Image (cartoon, rainbow, N blue to C red; front, side):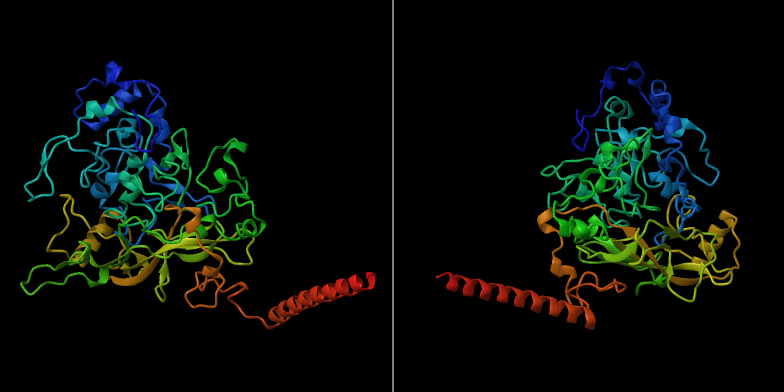
Length: 506
């Protein structure tokens, strides 16, 4: 029995355990059976960001996580819990009064199912189906619940399928949010991801995002800008999630390339584009255009030729992209994430998670990002972003009757946050670190991709350093030219001297 990532599923045959024979009526019943043996696991999970959706930034000290940080997709989980928490590592988070101390609500199967049949339902606050249901409503398609006993007896180490069930579908659909994470990575060809491809290293997510007592390594709130330790095996913490932890600090065995690696992140050269697996990622969401109706008076919904929803009366306009070139920025490890309660400057585009760094910062390297473009509601009087009650408490969207004024007021009342009663729309940007979909080395960027005077050069937006081959500097060009002339002259003189010396010898 093997997990989806190609790793051994377990060191024990769980099908022989009496506690797992079932039948089980719910996910929490399975968890209770698991905890009878794994009596520390529940408490470990409850300390993880997968459970708390809350973290303290190690660089700014700010409280972050999905409970506090704003985004430019649906904005916030507040008032939208039953749908958003379908990706929580637990059961039953239906409102803001969720009990985070009840370990029986930890979801063991989400991470340890190896049958690939365990699926949470998008509207059921982390629960799978427990009875047959028509999905989607009105389709006539009856979906059967998973066999919890069978799944519990087949648990093992997490594979790509387990992690991807949530991380591939962030933002409401496959590939929507991250750009470098989508279902193509369950079994990718080597040219899409050399690490996870069965024809490459066939690695699982947890091979890099190592777990120590159920605490995952890696964070988009404070990604490691520059790993100064190198190989993971040299250290006691065993926290990978960096390229250097496997490839060490001088991976190229080439002085010129290794010198580049001190100021350029590995991902910058080795992930030339994201959304390369044939699945488009969302690159724009404009809430301000919602409310349009068609000639028949009904709410308007428009799909493109690929089946992507590009306009929704409830949520506005969307745009998508495939094989997208990243945006490059300096990053030194510090991210300034906007929280829902922060005062904002509405006189300019709002960057929801500004990254620090510059050419003069020794801790910074040039990193690749997906920059999500948004236009989202905010309170122009209080100068704060607002909670948008996107989904009704009956777990369905306000199909055909969406009213921004009502949904925002409902969201702010629910959250208990100050609201002036007025709303507008502010243009936003959100930076998503590009770290997956690593291409084979032969597909890495070439020198000319950056060192060029073409306006299409990769680093055209990095303007605070002198880049040979791209920039002009009178003194540097003069000295460089003189050095070349000098080298040619010295070589010529040496050659002439050799000829004259040889003649004298005759």
